[in-house]
Length: 544
Image (cartoon, rainbow, N blue to C red; front, side, top):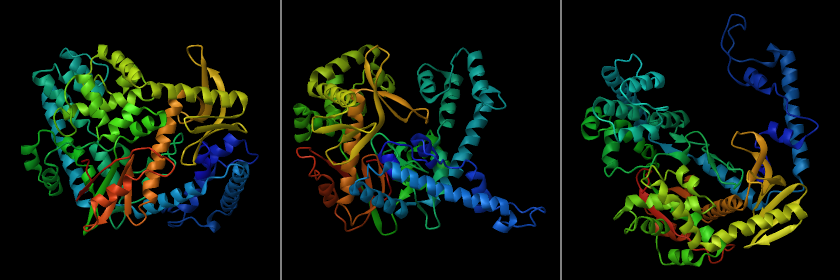
């Protein structure tokens, strides 16, 4: 599976076999056979009250089951033979072994907090729905269609009750309508799902394991989440996080009602805090600062951005200051605008324009429609080397595909081999694009296409172009930097990682500064790249 993912192929045995067109394919009846022989069965009179199906209970099925398992091995051997000319580098296997250690180690769950949060959420929902019934007269006010009809009867027309729409409607709503929308907003919080996932994932020792998928992001090789999905946890902004956590943990419902207007939102902000270190230890959370912006500037040679990082300036704050004409400091004056600056930096860095800014929530965060295009134009004028990088990569990839040859730009090498485009990264790892070709985009120009898992989760031809491939490359390099940090912290008890952040379970004597210094070390294959890690310690996981 790792080998297939490394070469840009699907991660399931069935799909890899189909894509490679193997003579022998994985049998489709396997799921039913596995369910029959490998899982407990219900006791019935017909099966004599047994709880397990044995080979002697269904000899014919057992023969098919043995044949199914043999076929799996045969398919695996054929896949190995097909991929043998493109071996996975030993360094990637070492990363995989480290990934498995972290998955097996797991991270501790505060079971008492989780169970209390689930109980409080159920109680809160019951009260919210009861209040909605009183206000609307609906038997089932949680029904989207019925609530939309009620709003329509009261002069509020809307096609959806999604989070953004409800938030926008609240701006002008008054009286009962405002309260109804506010209650709907609270009910829409999905916090309990995360707590339930934690409850389900926690083992007997309260540690959740198997939460990271190696090479989960096919295009860059980044990790993806499983089970609890640490990659999309809600942020926490409460100043009294520890106090709120203590009240939830002790199920102090009335105190929570008195102190917090929105209990579902409080529970949502406390999700991260359900991860705790083992007794006698602390968490050290180490997060690379603006890693993608740093890598992009380094790769393109955008000196003014490199200098900003060298001087210790926050690139997102600098951008926000230029956008809004005010001083912006992280966790300080106008600090709430930093996120808007970050959105602009990330949206524009990979060829994004007005649409990208909108998709990242620019309008929801206070930017006006007429501001967006000038922001894009000014950003591109200020970053000519990054723009140049996009189209240099675009030309290099097209030349490699058309001429079936090797090309290079900005230290990145591209080569076409046996219907595969390989992109050799500074780390020595390669990205792979299957069956690359030159197509035509919607504007009538040339586009780069390749086969991969698309947005429909199916194997299909995907269209790309220079800026998008630059995004893949930058994120892949950021991933390699994270893995380099993991490998240079061999004695640290890494129990989780989220995007570009490591969560380390450490003894009280472990120095935060030592971890910070180690994380900030530049890999030998990236000379000149300036790294910085934001490191802090905590008694429960949180976003600093």
